[in-house]
Amino acid sequence: MTKATNQEQDRASQGVYTAMRNTPERLAWYQDMALGMYLYWTVDAPFGMVNAHSVIGASADYLRRYFTQLPAHFNPRDFDALWYARLAKLCGFDYVTVPAKNHNGFCMWDTATTGFNVMNTPYGADILREYADALRAVDLPLGLYFSPDDAYFQWQRGKAPARAHDYANPEYNAELLEYDKAQLRELVERYQPDILCFDGYRDATRSLVEYSWRLNRDIMITRGGIITPEQERRDELRGPLEAHYTIGTQWQYKAGNDALKSGRELIELLIDIRSRGGTLLLAVGGPDADGRLPRNMDDRVREIGLWNFVNGEATRAVRPWHITHEDRTCFTWDADAQTVYAFDTQPPLEMGEWRTITLNSVRATDATDIEVLGQSGTVLEYQPEVDPKTRWQQDDDKLNITFCRTQRLYNNRNWPNPLVLKITNASSA
Image (cartoon, rainbow, N blue to C red):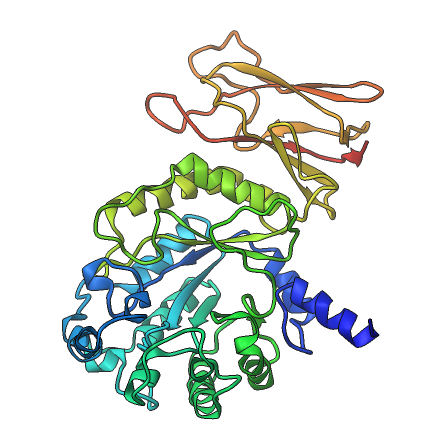
């Protein structure tokens, strides 16, 4: 096997299909981020249906109605991009990714390349401009999702929409490639995205990824530039990676018939991904047909937000510890501060209840201090006789930590989500 072939296989194993890569500086910037909000919708969101995929294998009559009638019903009259930006900022999301163009070819911006776009709907305004301005107002990076295979482009040319044929792949269709490039040029030059996420079959986006970097070398490219597992836990993977997950079972708004992950499941998902050096991009199930975030999705986002408000330092600007977890304790590592964060994912403690954990991979030093994030360790409400300070003992081969839950975050004192221990001046055992 030649050296060039080895390098190609190495790039492919990392989700990279180009000779170019993300710059080390931009990759480090991205790896500091823990959590992205995925605001996923397109022209078929008013039905609460699957995004775009219904056109694959659809009848001629269905396609005609989809492409010519649906835009007349896209009118999210309550959409407020600044509200979403503020929600993301409040709840500890590090960036927001929004669809510029989905597989159906519908463009969410004022584009000169096609009439199948948001300007030709009753809403009639440039949604990407609204997002870009709102996110910059709260100092959050803008990510854009872009699908190159474009069912509307195919339909206009008398082709049955597909995602696997040569004419659906810009690497084999020069006309489609130039069309996609024209759209990317508009997106990069007008909206100056910080992040791009391409969605196509394997190397279908090779030319588009490199073209984007020629337009702006500082863009961070996730899918097409790093590994992006989707709705699957792969324990063997290590970062940098962007893990794509949904709160429910669908990327965009689903009108009923859904099963949502609990807040704790989502928080433990974030912990697991960060312990392996990855970043979680979470589709929050909205906006809905009117542009609002459904109440049940809003509840999940705010539960994550509260946990981030207490524990966010344990997931941002950190890297993996030399092992990801011991039993039910996961780890992240701040090398600059020589600090280990230990996430206790055992069943939740009641307020005032104690727990002892034993760690074999972490060693305390003479300068070590250990605390539960968010807690002072000096007061247990209504129990002044109790000293709730965290205690620890370093033995030859293990570190024993005993801690108490003292902070009340809900009225009923039941907090179902993981506590985090901050272990300063730590070393590897």
